[in-house]
Image (cartoon, rainbow, N blue to C red; front, top):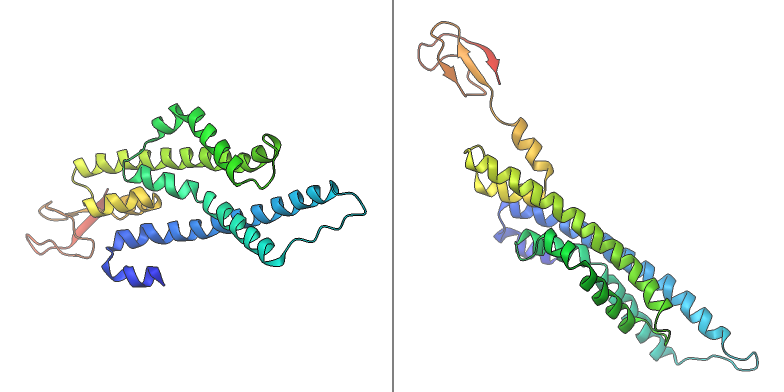
Length: 219
């Protein structure tokens, strides 16, 4: 609904950039919720084992549901890390060199975040379990950022040569597959069979100079 509301105000290349991001964001959120549900189930099972057999564990329904929903929401949001980092790289707020150089600090921040959201008193094992997928997502963000930066350099080089407009260059940074489409869409040069005048027209069959048929196309 939000996308439909804002889409009329977006340019074509912005729509092409946002749609893949929304799809990946939804997938990552679902994976985060699934991870949180499995992790929470195992943690609760372990905690119940600590109670003596003659003691029944009966949590209040409202408190239990509120806690579970909060934890699943937090896990889903934490799994948005690649989306956040790639957007910051795209906006040139961050770059992959900073992410690589500050990797140790980033790991510490991820561990501290895992320690905060983990619902047990264990200071090492449980937070490490939550931290592992976040570290994997962080490294995936670096790989995605390198691809964006590489595509940006290629687009800027083509822009400097006057081959593609700036709007298309911005779209290619978000959606790198557009780069190959742009390259293949460049019109081939045809030459007149009589006067040899070149023509960049993809649809024209006759020379605009002398009116004779155009010859073979040359890339």
